[in-house]
Amino acid sequence: MDFPRALRERRTRGHLSQLDLALRAGTSQRHLSFIESGRSVPGRNMVVRLAESLELPLRERNELLLAAGYAPAYPESSLDDPVLAPVRTAIDHILRGHLPYPALVVDRGGDLIAANTAFAALTEGAAPELLGPGTNAYRLALHPDGLAPRIRNLAEWSRHILARLDHLEELRAELAAYVPELEPSAGHLGFAVPLHLASPYGELHLMTTVTTFATAVDVTLAELKLEAFLPSDPETSEALASPAWATACTAAGQTPSTRTAPGRALKVNPNPSTNRS
Image (cartoon, rainbow, N blue to C red; front, side, top):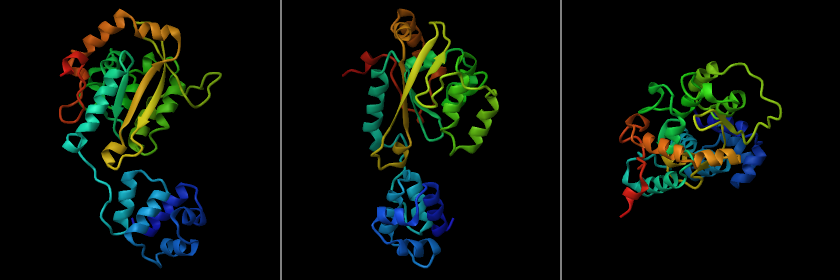
C-alpha cells in the first residue's frame, strides 16, 4: 500500500479530520493535505509523529514507516529473546499471584502464551484438540466442544469475544458460525460482561480485567493481553477458595495437555514454592 493511501485510511478510521490530525502532529493542514495527495514526501520524523498522533498500535506504526520507505522503528522480539526475560518473570509472578483465580496471557491472534493452573482447571472437560499446543483462547471459549455448552450467558459472552476480533476476520467468521442466534438477556449492558459458567464447583460468576503493556516499545510485548478472572459474587468466591478447587488446580498443573508448546509459551510453575531461591 502506498503511503498517502495508508495514512488517509488510518486517519479516516480514527474519525479525524485533516485539521485534527495536523494539530495533533504539530504541522499545518495544508502540509498534511499535500502528504495525503502525494504532492509532498514526509521525512521519517514526520511519519513517526503522524503514527503517534493517530495512536496506532506499534505494528501499524511500523507498517506506515515501511509504506513511506523507511525502516521500522519498533523491534519485534521472540518471547524467548533474552531482552524479554524480565517480562517473562513478571508475567509468571502475576499469573501465580492471581491464584486461586484463573488468569491467562494471549497474543494478538488469541493464541495462549501462558496460563495459571486455575485457568486449566476452569477448562476441564474441553475437547483435547482445543487444549495443549496451539490453543486459541477465543476458539476454546466459543467452540461447541470447548466452554460454550457450560456458558449460561452465551449470547452476551460470545458478542464480548467477537467484538475483539475485527482484526482477525477468518477467526471471527469461524467463531460467529458457532454462536446461536440468541438475544441478550434482560439487563444486558454491553460492557463489563460477566461470565456465568457451570462447573463441578457450582455456577461460577466471573468478571474479567484485561491488562496490556501500554508503554511497550516492542511489538510482541505491546500485543500481549493478560486476562484475569475475578469472582463477582460471594458464592463464586467461596467456590474458588474451596479445597476441591485447590485440588483441581493442582491436578491441572500436572497434566501435560494443559501446557502450551515449549519455546512458544511462558512456563508457569504450578507450585510457587519450587521457584523460590
